[in-house]
Length: 338
Image 1 (spheres, one colour):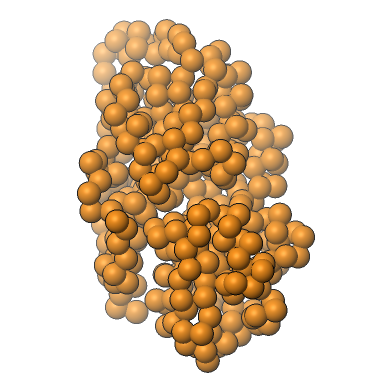
Image 2 (spheres, rainbow, N blue to C red):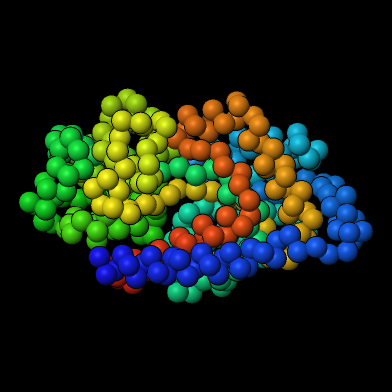
């Protein structure tokens, strides 16, 4: 548990730093200048850069939200998929964009959290390169298994079965540094397990490997595997919320067995650093207004997520918390991406 205490101290320190930095969000300037900066925005279409391929969970959320933002702000929000290199290509494109309010990043827990822990050569600091606008959607990861290979019906039984067969079973992930990979490595470290990592290219491939029995289990974003769970192709044993998921209320959290265990899948909108505060504030107000749409909340919930559209300060704290958590794990487990 010493490692967990060190991790918690690092996360608390990071959250405190984020809270201190977030206070600059609403720092008042000259009222006329602030009004002028936002009054004409947006005057043309706005780019929403995604560090993901079409069809990903992040892409699905973007295509739900973009029309609502267009209706609220009067200009199209054009989705630009820039996937590849674990999200680095899209994040770098957004980082290099002019901070004029016409380019934003829809980042996620991997591209804007995990990558800070596993890449040593990032040309930016993910804790400071962007201005958080709003955490948009969050949801748990879920631990799923192939019942033919693992007949355990609950998490304690699964842990016992895995401990009894060290090194004999494989787990799937979407690649080194993916949310699936890091969640399982945290699970292995906390539960004292020896399971072999088999990386795949994305959720569909790794899900099919577990369904076929090539691998025995995996963590995955709930939004990406709900269809397989509903069809009975994968069995869900635990979620990584500290509480239960509204979509899988019968499935307990990992934290019931390993106290304090939590990993979140999330996405949120960030602005290149230097984007005028009045523009960020207007975009945040439009995003916060999305919470009033019962239809949008329900569509996100059916995907396994929760529409948050929360304040930038909380989003900044989430990012710094995750970076601290994953840096601690990467150092502990020797995880590094090339």
